[in-house]
Image 1 (cartoon, helix red, strand yellow):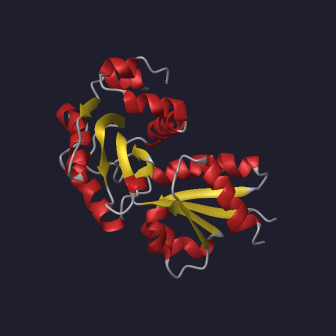
Image 2 (cartoon, each protein chain N blue to C red):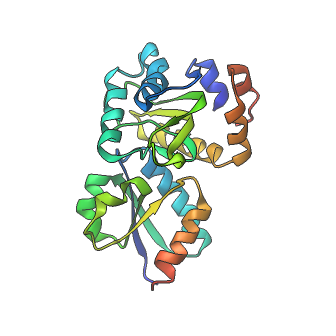
Length: 146
Length: 96
């Protein structure tokens, strides 16, 4: 999975973002550059989070920006982003800070489910998450097993 | 216990809710509870909540379900089977 992120250039590394909205936009940017997603996609994600709260932060440090299936996306893909400094989604709740971002895009539910299953397995592994938090370059991603 | 009807909800119904469903399937299996698990977005989940025994969602979405009869369980860490197992125990098993 991490090898695929690097091979397909679906990754980015950043110092940090003062506004979580900028983090979501930056996380989606490689998919937009590739033509997999439309600039509408990050807008939809941001709109949903503003409406419902930071539900895309699924675990401490981990955020999976996504919106509805098929809306502003043209392929089924995942795209990785890591920030050095935590991005704050809720100023009153440090458990909603994130440094690891994996954008989900889906037009094919079967492929998407396979992706999600791999992703949730990988991110449930605390040792792997610790390594991801230290990753600074694509080479660091290639060293990971998953 | 009769088969438990469970719905997992998230903002869009395609990301977090499916992860909750995958993790819940494992958690319920380990606890030996027969559960039927669906997933959808919060709006849909709220309108259907009365057909289910339990709703699972991200802790930040619990407020959306004010007034529903089903047991609503908010999760802080959607990847933690441990948190799910503890909440299934305290909110479902212990209250039967």
